[in-house]
Image (cartoon, rainbow, N blue to C red; front, side):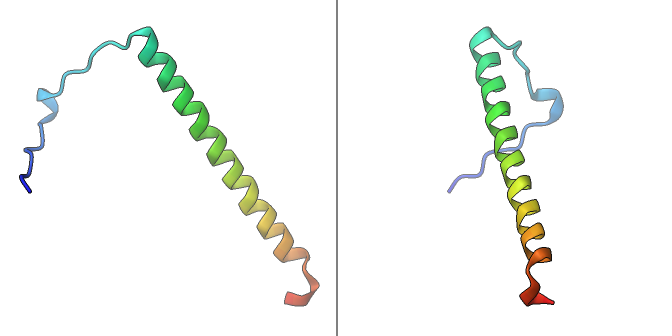
Length: 57
């Protein structure tokens, strides 16, 4: 497999976002935030369940 050269920071061009890109980006961030929130809630619930389970003590 051919390795591509890694561009230097000065070589990278950032295009100004158009409306479609901006809306996709916002949608992606929203989905990601929802997933992170759900995971955090699930982990917190799991901790609560393990603390309240009398069999573990």
